[in-house]
Image (cartoon, rainbow, N blue to C red; front, side):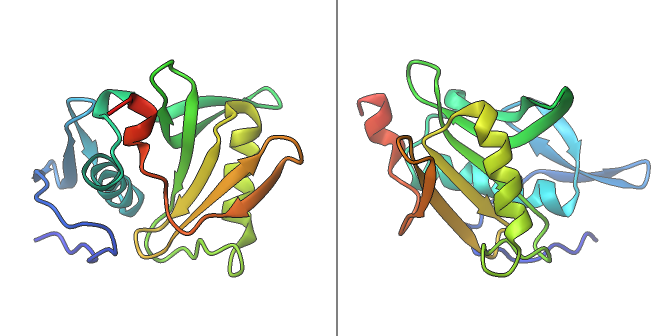
Length: 159
């Protein structure tokens, strides 16, 4: 049996299997089995939350979005695109035991902001499945202001 923590994101039914001694989770968006790491557990919950509770259409979600920083290939965990294909939200996911609060672990927020300096999304979020913080980018000052919650993205798609 695989022991996974209960997260503070909407629960759901996930397809999980063990093969060759490795736990895997079915990623419906990519149509493949992925190694079930604690971070992947959080990412799959976050994707479900974005679709079911924040109005994101599944085909506008890009996982492991390529980011080049100083010539080094990096990947943002989740990027949500608007209907014109421009990044609207960048989400950095961490394992549940990794603090993501800007006050407790500034490094996670800084990582998301570094990625967003390339991606250019209007919103940045960090989560470990237990905590979720969202910030809106002021494009004039390049300052990130905390948001009460993730925006309802259904308006981005004209729904």
